[in-house]
Length: 122
Image 1 (cartoon, rainbow, N blue to C red):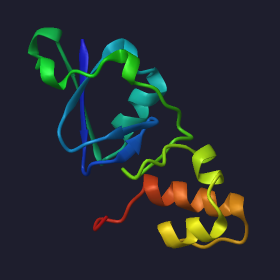
Image 2: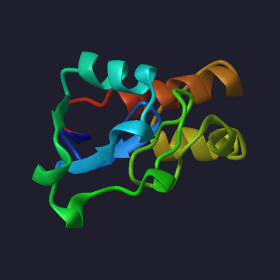
Image 3: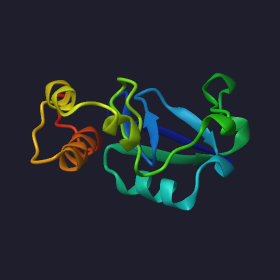
Image 4: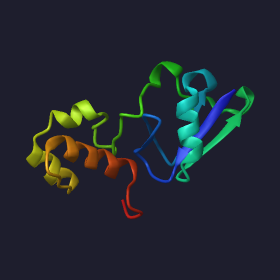
């Protein structure tokens, strides 16, 4: 069994995985229950169970390519985790993501929130 998964825009993260408008097919054993639940509960995500024989080979995701935690987020710009954001300077974060906060931890939280919950025009 596979999960057919896509979302409202390319680069949207849920369950620690960047998603695309074009559906991708993930083997059932490549996602944990928390990831599947997070995707099912997000109105911007589409997730459907499909039998193996109905899944186009070119859209199958190798289970070795799937990893992630809920601490990960991104926007198609190569930033994939809190750790990577913490390596950036405050000035870089403020300029790149157009957010401000009283300290770096709060700033990184604001960036992760922005990336996880984009406005409709993003």
